[in-house]
Length: 577
Image (cartoon, rainbow, N blue to C red; front, side, top):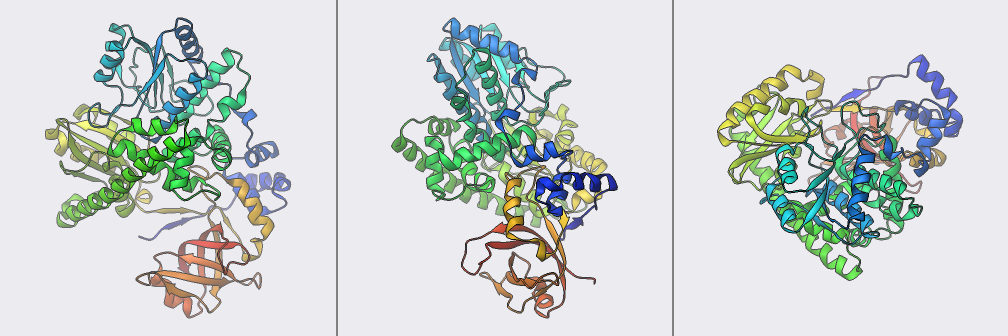
């Protein structure tokens, strides 16, 4: 599927701003353009972006109910009440539980954690978990990365004398649970500046508030847990701007210098020891292994790993989770193949439609979110994948760039038992007999609200440059734009009218990729590049006809890349010039 290339030249006002911040970028105009496109509005903001500082984190007490939450926690500790730290079974939830549990353990021992199972408890707070808490004399539950819609469950807990502090980041409904405090930056009217924290990020802010209220001045004790926050930010794909970027930046530094023992074992299993760990490594290697525990077995095993205090113990737990990830990969491939086969045999599922809804009651509940992502990538349509569990159809959905799938699912809420999520990913439960009507109304909403350009992959271009711009100084300065993520994606550059040096060749098992050596008219340098799955352009390139390319700049130590740079080609077009 071809991409739309989106490049909007800077406005006159943006050009003036780029000139003002040019000095902060070492006089390199393309880098100033990148900063302007990322919302930087002054030299001071440019410095803060390029050198993220923990001192720029927001006051946690700007978050509504923070004082109530801190006071209730302090009261529980003063009265020696039993406290339970409760979280979702995914990466965000398990890292959040590990962070809060580990930090509070420094000051309090009457504390435990609880991770619901995907199969027995289901998503969020379960009645089973509340009964367990009551039987074990728990008086306060701190719930992380879920709970914002658990109205009946928290009412039930109150009847049993159990208070709740909710730390969530999912979209709240008009009716809120009767918790003692709700910490959620998405609460209507909230003045908190960073509205898109991860669940673990909300837990970190809660612990910041607790530390401030008690005069705990050993900031390293809490900041040393930012590696967990960085993993949650990367895995949950929250916007990599503002406070999230600061926490991810310093968390990545921790991952690369002195990670907690559980993460150290995962890093070893990923074969990342003694390598520079990036956000991409977290997304594609570290995060999936932590997530596999909750998908395949129990998220509690991930927390056991992350709170481990013994390196050998952590490595053994890590090996078990690594095996879950291998099992997950096999299931993922099988179910994705089955889903594609169903679509190929039943073309009415997608023909003439703007969305995909597919159901198979035998699919593994822990994998359907991944399969929804695969279908969205392949067909570039909002996708819902459903299976059967505990008497209900349960599903996961994923969206395309720019389309709010939460609103689409919300439009069918009268058909659902429960649902929750974000703009781009929503989970839901419904009765099996409602699937057909859900599919019809979901498609109707998508067809009425999705824009035509949202059904075609978009390639947003940050700057047009020449090969002469890609100097060692430019590449070194570009490193400061890390860490990358939503709202701060790895910069995509465009260079027009480049040529094959004469040495490009097809590579890959089926000769599907192109290994390129390219030049343009701005410099005598020849740059290495790789274009995956673009063999259809080879004849045009090899005939020395000019092409326009979009690419990211990757640093490489591989033999043959003497200048340390390789261009990762995102798209190719025959040049019109």
